[in-house]
Image (cartoon, rainbow, N blue to C red; front, side, top):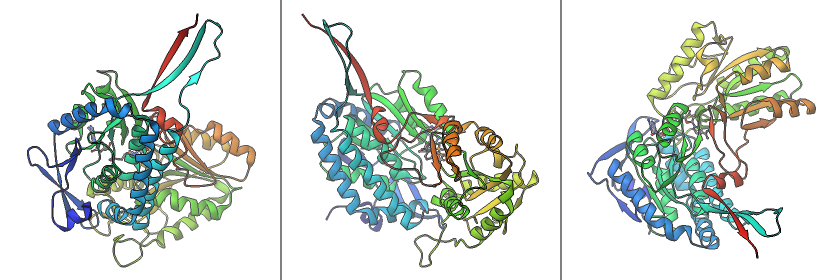
Length: 488
Ligand code: NAD
């Protein structure tokens, strides 16, 4: 029987890193505990490396690059397809691990696992399509074309909120393109990612092509960025950290693909289908316990329907059940990732209350347990309050009224971020105006779940650089080489 992370946990064994095709402990035998956010119980010990492990993984990936980058696209596609099948076969177990380490609902953990598998399927197909272009030369004595070559080793640095799918949407296109990989997931949620790499090994990926390290964030990231073999840093996380990594990368002029923070407006016009808008908001705000980069952060409601919408939102939050996602009761919301996240959301709520806001319905401010927080909406927060200006990253949002389209577009765009946005309206002309004027990279119009593997995801302004998913996602791992051939 294959060893799984679940089996390691059951046996109380240390969860290892993957370097050069070997499952290894940290070189200095260091460990780090992983906890379940429901009760802060220790659920695993992971091998916790440092600079040496980062360098060793980057060395292995660099050595493997020559042969992997010269394999046929068919060969790589077959391994990716097998990985897709294995992740799907193991989706229940991996989904439960995700739920255990992050506190997300089990259905969301399994859903994220299936979604992650889809990236391997999609990129296994995309890499078989033609890459490159032949130009219409203006000179008959020359043939001019471009070809694509893999950029080198990809360092994939990821957060805890969607730990599996965010790694998958980097690793799948990187491997498809012919890059090798060193992955460093968040130390808060490293377990399901381990299963992704186990699936790659079981699918027949050659040693050293994909490496997985755990360890201190900035120390390992900097060691990777400074390593000559690394050709691209693909980071998802907060804007300040993305900005620090970009500065470090400027020393060697390393390409950066950055998926950073969000501050999504969610706009409800009076001509919208209000039922659908409220149902959509429940998903866009509370999915993943409110800890999603594309979560609705500021809800704008046209003033003629403000009372009606507020009443519905109060009912929605009071009906939501909170608890252990892996417990016996059905729950709608699990815990936040840790107490520091609870404290931060709490700070934003208190600042809004000080600015004159009030909660619709019950106050969520008193945590129900260590890392639990009730969902809630706050109305009448000041425009310069933290609630109106910062990414909440928890099950709370501000609700603001507006009187016309120009005003709400201006307010929605009045942020340093530009990741996602949502609007509900039945006015077709307005839909098009919003599509053009809202300053976001991802726009959900009359629906709350825009993420699919075949669409390009990414942000404008402080929300990042580059796109993930779709053909654009492949380009992050490829260099374009232009060739001009003289013909006699
Ligand atoms: P974070 O930036 O604190 O951490 C992200 C990763 O970077 C983690 O692995 C962490 O260990 C590491 N890290 C932390 N400090 C570092 C440092 N100084 N140098 C190098 N690495 C460091 O973010 P988080 O709290 O894990 O995640 C939440 C943030 O991520 C939110 O802002 C959210 O919007 C954003 N996010 C964006 C997307 C997207 O697709 N744009 C998706 C998910 C999350």
